[in-house]
Amino acid sequence: MNMIDRRAPKDRFEEIARLRHEARQIRDQGVAVSFEFFPPKQPALATSFWQAADELTALGPRFVSVTYGAGGSTRDQTRTLVSEMQARSGVPTAAHLTCVGASRAEIDAIADSYWLAGINRLVALRGDPAAGIAAGYTPSPNGYAYADDLVAGLCRQHPFDISVAAYPEVHPQAQSAQADLDHLKRKIDAGASRAITQFFFDVDCYKRFLERAARAGITVPIIPGILPIRSLEKTASIAAACGAHMPDSIHARLAGRDEDAAARIAVDIAVDQCRALLKCGVRHFHFYTLNRADLTRAICAEIGMGANVSLRR
Ligand SMILES: Cc1cc2nc3c(=O)[nH]c(=O)nc-3n(C[C@H](O)[C@H](O)[C@H](O)COP(=O)(O)OP(=O)(O)OC[C@H]3O[C@@H](n4cnc5c(N)ncnc54)[C@H](O)[C@@H]3O)c2cc1C
Picture: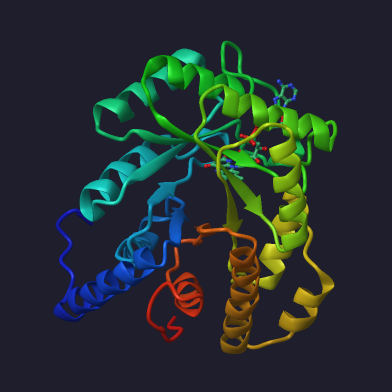
């Protein structure tokens, strides 16, 4: 399917116009959002990917981003989607880039091609091997070893706007919480403009992390990553792998619910989290959209960042 030529039907144009109106409301309140997508795993999922991208970019996010598959598995797909999303939506689109499975020269060439294509935002990461984080990590021969090396290398090439990852509950492979914070500081000092956190559910933990980061001299924004819970089982399994604590109360609220009830509860959980974060002064939320617009739009609407939407599947 030619994605560029796809035409939206009239009702979708009207919907997009309404969403653009909602976007003005968001900006008026000084609250910003950004949305993360991943390359669709099968060609058949391209339609739902672009539907979600169109609906969410119409909300006027500060930026959107497209991930880079574990082990560098989506290199070409990420590259194509990033360029197409920026051209199609006009929203600044960041390309995720990892150190895994490539030499410095190869990564430099990818970064160079982004710059020449007008993509000047990157999310610079160490990445995980294709088999997952549990498989352990060995830097590639002649590669960038860790994300701080990558940030420094990218900054030497071009004046990219670079985001990096941060872990309020500590990265699972970190030697200690302090070592992890020191690594975050190194990434910022190497030239990153902001950090985006791993998803979390414990707002107090995020607050303590901000305090520790401030004491360590980290002054850039640390944007909370919000994951709407689409599937309790999958979220619990991802949370366990990346060291994010899922409180028992979340399990109790969602276990055994049918799909509609679970979606409504998932929105409530994320809305409560965002409201607590707003009270702490947070004014930018980064949503892990899982390539679906419904939950994220409903959450944005509930916290006053758009008109109410019904949950659709
Ligand atoms: C917002 C966000 C987006 C993500 N997007 C992607 C993506 O698109 N593709 C993907 O594959 N993964 C992605 N990930 C997952 C990420 O790649 C993994 O969490 C990975 O395990 C760590 O990447 P990092 O950039 O945080 O690594 P780093 O900051 O390099 O840290 C990795 C670990 O090594 C330690 N460390 C850092 N420097 C050193 C050093 N010099 N010596 C010893 N230890 C060190 C750190 O404390 C930490 O434990 C994302 C994560 C987040 C939070």
